[in-house]
Length: 491
Image 1: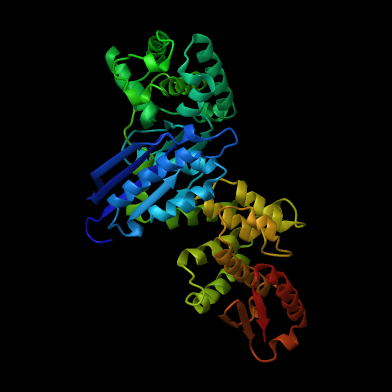
Image 2: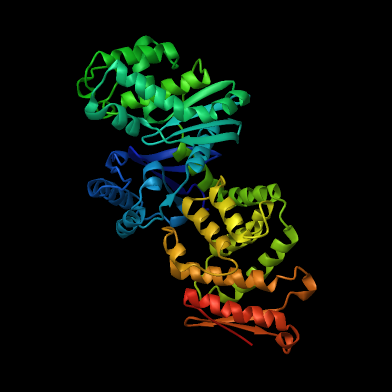
């Protein structure tokens, strides 16, 4: 990076879209520009979890504004993440196609665990305290809870409850009552119950809250001369809310007009967290996901995080590291030979090598159906640093690295662009095949070239004549790759 470059973090949340532009000076960020637009995306989710046309229009209008602000920014200096609503809506691809037409930067849909990790990094880089700390972020559709120490998270979770969906479910049309509050809090506590024991066992010395909901509650608490939130203060706020019969008529000092519709749902969630985790005091922190993104852009640490994630998972399942290293070496050779013709990027090579490191994690379950077991583990594991799309692509590379390729199953995966994926999968399958004997001396040197939809593999003179089993395997692979509309030729 050049000296003091501007970088930008974009957070496409369930309630609001945020844009933060900053530059790093002597290890700290100087904020140059902020934009916040309320989109109410979560309110646009239909009963069958599809994003409504009106919600899409609101989101696209804001993305056009953000695109104008970021007009001269290089793509490497902009990080965009989408959270609960976009990761859960079933018509996400329809939205992403429309977004691409007005917003040139890649939108990374991230998992709840990845959202929690970034939130913690935002807090950790701006708040300094000794011992474990608990961080709570209440969004429109989900609530993230993280325990960590200094810059290292220890526990991460994302629960599918937020100020919008709880308000919609229990305070429909803004109607308020003690009975509705109690029902909502019981439901929120039920959603928290699976993680309560592990969080209380880990413990913490200080508790921080981030996000608009907690900021709003903190502002309301100021009328009681309170700088922190306690159960007593939250119950006072609840009593004030219940003085009204409807959210529309709320008149509470410190509560903004835009927060009226969702404050009851947000308060319910926080009361449930306090009750389940026995929290006595919560400090407000004005740093969260966007700040975590800024730090990762500035440190260019994304690859390091993902590499550490893969290494940790590989070690956990005791994979054959020498075998995976040999496959990676072969993939590197393939990349050097085909990168130009097939428009391959460094991330493509990295994804292939990560797949090589994890393609046998399923041995811990059974060697029969290894590819299915490995893909399941990768698909359902927490992978810090990975977007939802990257995790899906990684899982499907592993799912189909051997045996039949089921095109129908691939087409059901919204993250996969078939043209690029077909080329990556063909290279991965071929690299695994050439390393099947797991002996360095038996790995053949090959030359790859391509033209149109044909991949040509050239072996050294007489090698195939001396290795008839490999020739038979290649003939079978020829048949499998036709499913990807690729012709494999070998000599």
